Image (cartoon, rainbow, N blue to C red; front, top):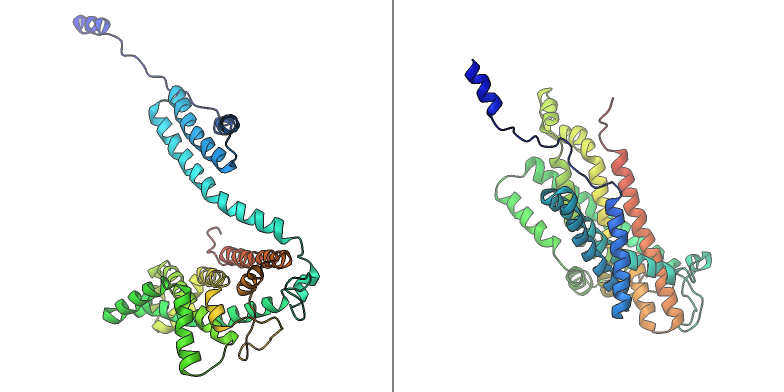
Length: 357
């Protein structure tokens, strides 16, 4: 026993690691970012760089390098690598958001010059292209009608196709449908317009109309609806289907009463995003609708205006008054797409499954 006690006493003491590791304060990333921005501005001014984008890129690089250096000195290399990865993610997000901010800021600053009630409630009837005045009312009507008809065509077909692929699709037919949906997803808008032009207008002899443009938009919208609806239906737990079938409910009724209501929030969101995707298409409209300076409430007869093609026409005129109208119409179109996205988010939250009691 005495020898064991002696051995324990003579053994070297094992150094105890500190339980608390040094950490950077919570305000450190913001402080490093502020320092990087200040240093980048100094470098930009000193080097004679006029572009603010160059200043921003220098600031991002300095922020990442500074984060790594300071975190290595305080927290160690392992934690520094984690902070650098987080910094790169945030820097990538900022770089991706900068063009969007620049686009919105430019459109708002130039579009608000003539955007008022008169602009929204008047058409271009009797307005000279080089003169002031006129409005976008006829283009708003055309866009709403064309997008509405395209949605009425594409949404039911896309949803039913997705239901078939998820609930019934097996074998070669399902593979063929999936393949053609993938192909349609990458079809350029001008190709959809040419297809309707060659069949509806040239082969069948119909003239330009909003309905022709709506059919081309429906072709572009359909694969987006199929894909989004398919993913939402796959998220429905199989236990719900099995429970309904175990009660003797037919499969079609299970789909209508259980599966679709469960996924209706995501399905609606996908449809709204598909509508926002086609709202800004101009190539099919230029081929099939032709545009119109007058108010045409009938989408089945005669040329009709639309917001994307109105913007193109005004910009093509090449004078200051037309440029102002083009920027104002672009702002209206951005607001329209933004409203659709907000509606989609609101519907998704409203229809989201309740997790609490």
